[in-house]
Amino acid sequence: MPQSDPLTFDVRLGDCIKLFPKVAASSVDFIYLDPPFNTGRTHRSSRGAFRDVFAGVDAYIEFLRPRLELAHRTLKPEGSIIVHCDWHASHRVRVLLDELFGSERFLNHLIWQYGLGGSSPRMFARKHDDLLWYAKGDTWHYTAPRVPATSRRMQGLTKKATDVLDIPSLNNMSKERCGWPTQKPLALLELLVEACCPPKGIVLDPFCGSGTTLIAAQRLGRSAIGFDIAPEAVALTKQRLATGVR
Ligand SMILES: C[S@@+](CC[C@H](N)C(=O)[O-])C[C@H]1O[C@@H](n2cnc3c(N)ncnc32)[C@H](O)[C@@H]1O
Image (tube, rainbow, N blue to C red):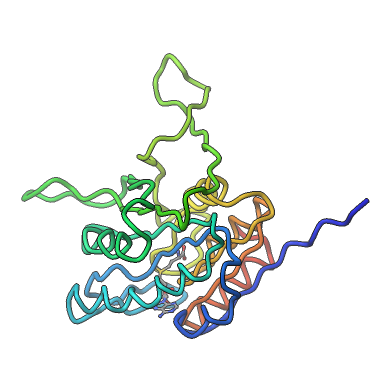
């Protein structure tokens, strides 16, 4: 019987602008990118911190532009990319992606509705992030994810996910929390990896933080590559991969 290739997990330390060129062109099935959002602050937690301060939204977009160009080069012709951002710059990131990938390659603007946090007496509470999904070419992988049905009539059943993903963010008591600021829930990454990357395919996360994307890939039988500029993040990702810690 032919042996199937073993899965590989490659975690590297450095600025993704320097690491992307080390990955072969047109070799990756799916890229998930969760960069700093241009919040104007440093995010801290028990296991590390990262700076999210740019000289305005123009400077932020010029930071993303060459990195997204490299992401485009790295994707297979049938690959796709999700860029995770929020209200600070999602309007500008979408214009940038239209420019780099082509507006005809836009697939979805996913809303990650996370619930947690305070409210404001002056405006509607901001309770979602924006995930922009683009294909590189005119075909792409998609396996429709199934999520628990919310209506009473369908209790216990599942339905196909829509472009609004209702997944709680990690609260302070969550066992999954590993101490990296802005850590994303595994449930979100599992849904995205399963939907957008074929089985045994390769996922790349150039701002991998605590490695949530790589853990999702490991659990779902995909190979993964992760980059991060913070040594603590790379150490945490390797530790989570080695122990299979959620
Ligand atoms: C929003 S966090 C990612 C969180 C991650 N998705 C998780 O679940 O833990 C953004 C990450 O980008 C990293 N970063 C910032 N600039 C970078 C760069 N130029 N190249 C690679 N990583 C970078 C930060 O160290 C931080 O870990």
